[in-house]
Amino acid sequence: MTDKMSSIPQGSSLWKDARARMAKNRFAMGGLWVIGIMFSLCFVFAWFCPDPNKINLVNKFASSSEEHWFGTDALGRDLFARILYGGQVSILVGLIATAVSVAIGIVYGAVSGFVGGKTDAFMMRIVDTLLAIPFLVLVIVLQATLSDWSGEATKWIVESFGWDKEFTARLTNVVPLFFALGLLGWLTLSRIVRAQVMSIKEREFVEAAVALGYGKTRILFRHVIPNVLGPTVVYSTLTVPGFIMYEAILSFLGLGVESPNSSWGVLIKEGANFLETEIQLLLLPGLFFSLTLFSLNFLGDGLRDALDVKASKD
Amino acid sequence: MFRFLIGRLFQGMLVLLALYTITFFLAKAMPGEPFTSEKNVSAETKANIRKLYGLDQPLWKQYFVYPKNIITEGSFGISTSKGRPVGDIILQSFPNSLLLGLCSLAFAIAIGVPIGVLSAVRKNSWVDWTCMAIAMIGICVPSFTIGPLLQIYAAAHIPGLKVAGWGNLQDVLLPAFTLGLVSAAYLARLTRGGILEVLSQDFVRTARAKGVSPTKVILKHTLRGGLLPAVAYLGPAFAALISGSFIVETIFQVPGMGQHFVNAATTRDEFLLLGLSLFFGFLIVVMNLLADLLTGFLDPRVRLAGETE
Image: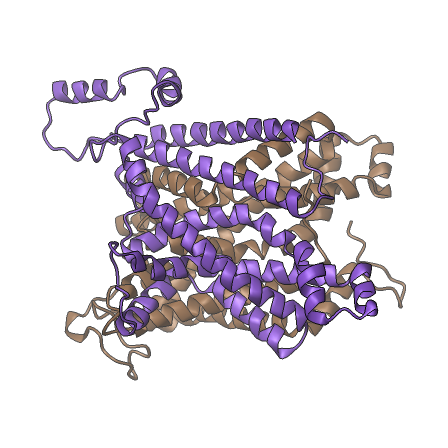
């Protein structure tokens, strides 16, 4: 369906060009490496770390040692392990919230752009209206509502499925965040998708599909959307750092991830309490957090420039 | 002009209505009651309290009563957690937030715009790269890391600055600086882009060919057009300042609206939540309008939507 299988030897596809442009962008490639390392640390190396929740009050605020690379925190927990496990939560929130918002944004934007006319004008008016509302205000209200239900959800899951209570509680604490962010974060994406769809629906292969007598829904989902998927997913890499930042903000305000779960926002918050004596508790999570955001931004910028995805204003 | 204003006013009302509807139903969807913290209250007392706050009415009635009270009586309801009128809370905390917001906006412009101009003028030099790297750091290092660091380094070593608190005029400096950094970073990036675009245009080349000095080219010919993206960002910047204030007010213990909003969300204080959301929404609508007007003023080519041809 995508035209990447051009068999003419000297031909160059969109993706090939993009890859070449990308490889030349040193910032983006650096970002890619850092993210790769961060990923393997948080999702692979973390399994070999000590238990991040093991409290050892005798050994609190220990300095760096063979056993605890980054020392320990106020409860004697291994800081390195906590940063890696916190990274899992932060990165997952970023990725899953992005996935949720991409799913909504693609369907909404594609329908709006494909149908066109008054429906399109109306749907875009809704997006404009929602965009004018400060994002964090809505997220806080939605998150407060969703997380208020997490207690009930925990009880329900434990009773009806017999899951481990502690595990369920930790899960129901994090899951609302995915949705609070994802359910509200699709607005800009839907505009980008719409702009892409508007140009794609004029292309010959869509015309061919119409001529073959396919239904509108089939054309939209089988022919149009697969073709906007690539650029959209690329653009959405730029939203991942935004979501990670919002997770940290919410957690810092006590509205997001709560202990014993850790996330980078939670760790920075905890670290800020012992600022005067134990500044590494703030600096180290902050460093991991900023480095990840830094790389994700550079990577997203690079990918966007390489594929030249542009957001349309209207 | 007039048609534009009417159109935008209508749009603003729509935004507020959407915000109100979403916030209202989300607040209603929270499980439990706002008064669960008070222990062992008899059912009768509870019913009375609910009646006092108008919570015994059917949902659709409550939905209409609240805006009606705002318009007819100017009343935003009574905070269930503080027992005071929400209007009073807003009136009391708004001046603090406004001062913080304006100072941080001033910081953002004073830092961001010159850096952006410098970066554009020295495009692709190490000056440019350094400036843009700093701007990226401003975007990626969260205020809740910078804030605490400023608390222990700046507040401890610069006389007159306090770690936290709100009493003297200089207490606004640290929070405003922390809050303004992110917007400064965005402004720098936007200014750079805007100036670069203008610099590539023909009239700039003509001016240079005439022998106009480089400084004058920037100041007289480029700046006005080059600042347009930055000016257009002022509306969103204000929204970012409001969001940022939730964090900064918590760190530096500023008695502003942000703190109340966060508290309202955690204590399920629905009237406070509604009142503050609407107030934030109102501020954003006004700021977006001002930013649009300013854009039209700077660039007469921009025809404001709704204006006749």
